[in-house]
Image (cartoon, rainbow, N blue to C red; front, side):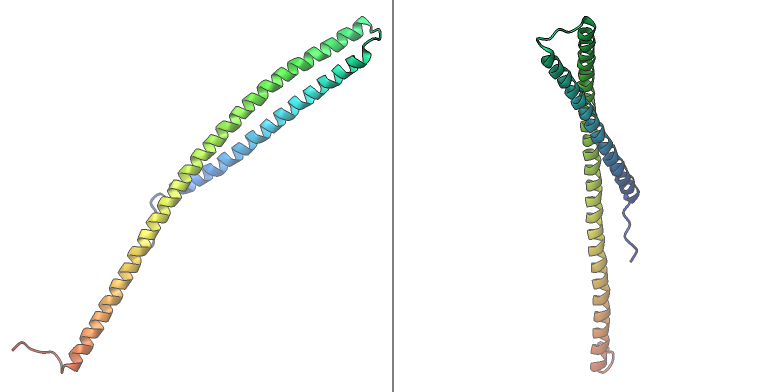
Length: 158
């Protein structure tokens, strides 16, 4: 009997490679989200430190250039926080898209793998049936040959 062949093996192999690439892309997207969140947290912590310094200065005279400098720093930090929040949102969306892409490809791979398994099972059952049919045929021939010998050779119709 011929060897099992799955006609979609090449496609399955390509889809598995695409699945690995999608997994790597999802990991990169997750890392980008983590970096964006870390940057946002750092800006928020800097702003908190500036606010704490201002609170500590309450009641003490402050030169105009100091006030302007602190105000400009707080304003730049506020703008950085808004930009970082937007970056977090964008990277999270990219991560979700990468996760959906990976899930789609994984579903396709699973479907192809299941189809391959089903076809292999059918092929194996067919091969076992063919083997059994051959064995039955051999057994039948041996039985007929043995029967013919015990009855005194071939019989002619009377």
